[in-house]
Image (tube, rainbow, N blue to C red):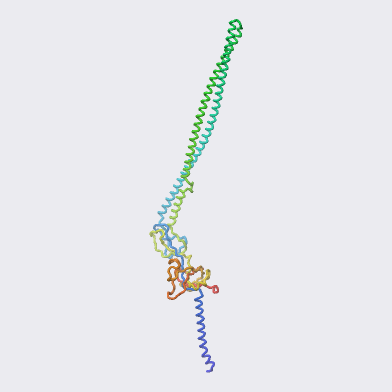
Length: 429
């Protein structure tokens, strides 16, 4: 055998061996880099919000409108509680509203009556004030009339005094003329003339005395009118006092009526209180129908008609289908390669041949390390991730939330199931 064949026979196996070793080394290095640098984990879970539905009113269930594992839409009827007592409460509240409105209407009428009485009392005060002014004017007029009548009496008395003096003088002249006639020293005509003058003076005196009597009567009448005017003035003042007292009383009654009423119409506290009670009763009645608060799947349904529903005690659970997401637990050594918004590929254990697309929504900011009690708060306040092995110091795993971009209709997501997640680095997208 030529030497070249002998050399090839020795060299070829060595080349093959070194090639295989190189390939194995490169593969090991690649796998090592993938393991240490590529953000990938098999520790992922499909998660969704679990909504516990508890009644807000108590009563017997008269209808269960869903079945276990059924898909429901937001607003669909789930359960119905007996409405009898709640409908009665609504009817009673409506009656209370009507009664409150009637009471307010009655109080408003009282206010109107009190207001009318107050206005009438104010008019009476004004009228009484005017009557006082009129009475005072009458008093002044009567006083002026009395003064005038007194002046007339005084004038009549002076006139009588003058007439008496004239009469006395006329009598003296008549007597002298008569003596002269008797002595034949005077004429009869002079005697008769002086006698006639005396008689005329007597008539004038009588007329003056009659005028005095009339003037005195007029004075007495004027004084009586003055007294009457004083009486009327006193009565007018008393009337004003009474009118003012009535006005004060009417004002107090009006104020009390307004205080009793408060706000008018539907703004009145009685009506508003009754309407609040009605609203509460209607709200309780509406709550007898328990509706789905979200889209999702009924889970673990265990109630039936006749069950007594208690406020605050969950009766039904819905898995919110709009909140399906992936919680992927990455080793802390790989977090430096992950950022919010990075694309991700999710592989469900139930559908390993149909990877799903998603993106990093956020990265957890706290975990509870095992074997270190409550370093980040009480248990349950932050995620507590158990390591795969306790006897090796493994990197702590941190939850990364992955939002699914889209899910085919024929893939059923189930909360709690397993998934693998790979976050695509920018140069691998």
